[in-house]
Length: 143
Image 1 (tube, one colour):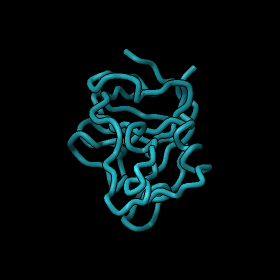
Image 2 (spheres, one colour; image 1 turned 90 degrees about the vertical axis):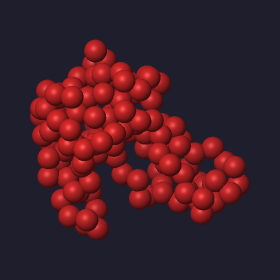
Image 3 (spheres, one colour; image 1 turned 180 degrees about the vertical axis):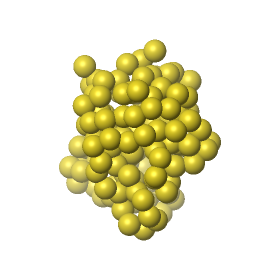
Image 4 (tube, helix red, strand yellow; image 1 turned 60 degrees about the vertical axis):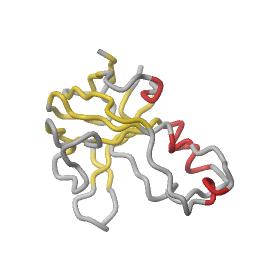
């Protein structure tokens, strides 16, 4: 069963993200109280546990390996394999995949050396379609 492994919030720019047990996700905004939440196609960033583990254990240190931190970490479903526009229920909220992968930086040595970086394709961004609470352990269901 697909589930939420962690939820992280940043309440102040430069302060870093901290773990929370629950968050409220607002329509056309993202995680309530998160300074990086905003309208548009990058309201919530979601990463699979396998991708996070790769980033943490990979010997090649990419430019943003330690700077790119997901809002929601999930396990049991690879949302990056679904098409943009796919909707899913996560806790009480409904979200829609709006973007896949993140932009690479030209100064990253992985880009310069043409190495494969999972962050280029595997994190997804989602728009909040229906507001609701998301808690640790909540199920994720493609709808």
